Length: 138
Image 1: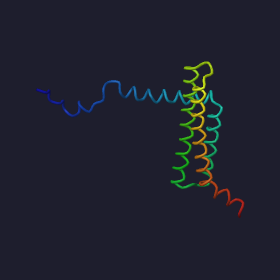
Image 2 (image 1 turned 180 degrees about the horizontal axis):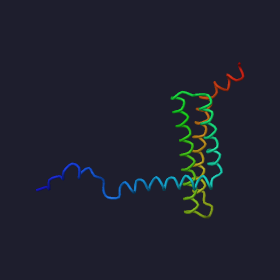
Image 3 (image 1 turned 120 degrees about the horizontal axis):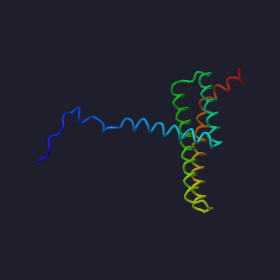
Image 4 (image 1 turned 180 degrees about the vertical axis):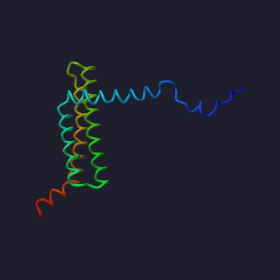
């Protein structure tokens, strides 16, 4: 015969240390982003671009929908760049000597960054283009 289930509060309580591990995982992620920022020139460029775009958003008072589009575009570029950095590091570890498959992995990862950046540029033109045009028309 199966044992009865424990009382609801005990059954729903997370295992010991779960919250500590969850909080620690944010620390690990933060260290990863900081490490990439220190070592990757392209990521520093994206950081400067992000600050400029946020400043332009406040300056032009873009709508909530436009903020959402800008945030998604920015996050996609950052995510792609961080994944590219991780793939490059793992490829260098696994294949210190040149190998065509290692080169292909790096090229594909860089291509993902390129597509994310092109998408972000399209969002930027659609969101900020009318504001910039208004400067020249008036």
